[in-house]
Image (cartoon, rainbow, N blue to C red; front, side, top):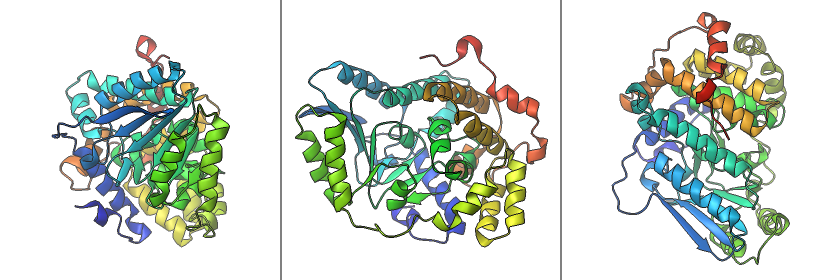
Length: 386
């Protein structure tokens, strides 16, 4: 299935199907070319990171994470590097997420990769969040899961009309990690709760209007924008912002179109302000609008365990620092690896592709508080440390 088919406009009832297609792409993780999987170059004033696995939508593996992390730390120390830019090769994706299939295989075989991947990915997310130098992500094309973690914690995120954002993890028995518990509850109203639980996709200008991206430019202006950034002489954050603002202001595409969820925001804010998944579902049932009924259909397909973990993750994350959130999310990642639904979700969506996961437990009411508390419990000496 080509990506063009994924992006063909369909009714939003089909958004779950589209999410699955994108998740399938994440599963194709063999890199056969001799080119490096990530380019790390100093150009002008900037350290430039280019994710280079276009055939698999630049999905992220452990060796890429390690290379990016160590180079980022070096550049942070170098006085001659005053700006960091991250982008994806190939034009279709910035980064469609982490290499989920490899993690699932490793988890099943009780291999260390399953711990290392999450530990080192979250450490990189934290490093981006605390980076002292202006950090600019050019999030052109598919930007999901791990790709969001590589961009959203930095100072500037530039979306284009081709940007496609989602955190679709509840569909594969996982949760919106990579610091999702930090940035999602900080979006307007209950928007982040809605995006986390439903995996709803935002496209183009909506990625900026929803608060994920800081700027929006036409994709054909990206090369010029990059050139102007690279030409800056030891820029401050303000200098970088000035360049980005100039491009953003000139871009007229969909400028006057309302945010895609604008007409539903009151409904989202009221329905998703409940403190339990069951209550959110009841709110949607009582609301009864076509939009609410559409979300109920989405909820029915998601892992009940993932929904419960995710709601609590987002609620708790709303008052935690990014580092505290990542420590919590590492505990949750290990709980998912100990459980059933993650492997089943990967099987149904990525491996056998029957799109028919058999979740266990199958009903929300079967998931006890005791089980949930256990997912959030400290791992002692195995906890993520910064």
